[in-house]
Image (cartoon, rainbow, N blue to C red; front, side, top):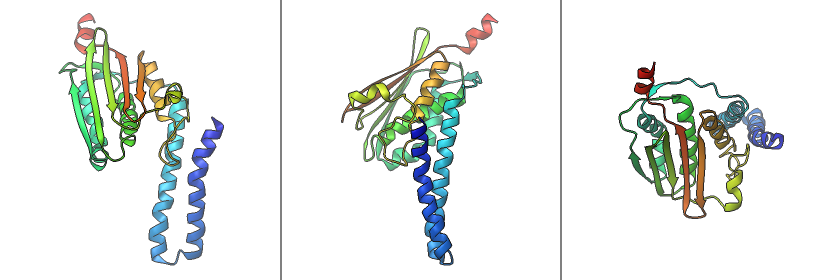
Length: 221
């Protein structure tokens, strides 16, 4: 784990040091400044992202429950990555069946989980593909199924994807903490995450959380 942290931070730091050295030597040149200052900022954001993910991983989730519509949370999350979906020329298929019911949910943590898995799906389809999201009730649980038609996950890696700092992505793309944090959140909610995948055929993430309908809880109170 320490090796993973060092690797994820040292890579952007090396690039930032090169930027600083170049700016010291050639910073008087406006073209050089325009070229290297954005790279320096990108490196700082990368380090910040690693640290924030690490803090999220290290701390116990503090849940804040209130009434929400599950399908609306999914739609709001998709707005955050709409530009990436369009950029990668992806087809989006939605089958949202949670209806108009209000559930007792933690908006921020669920959105974080959905975002992590959706971003992974988008990155698995860099040119084109189909991103599918389905929601439904089954007995006492809510199911959210997020699937892609991307590169898939090799069978030998399936048991490792929720391990901290495990990633098969190129340096600078993934920290290997997103799925670990997501797993911790869903487990804290009393749910589970299941994954199925086949190389070159895609991946299916199934998120299962307990169903707590707001109206039922009000009546019981």
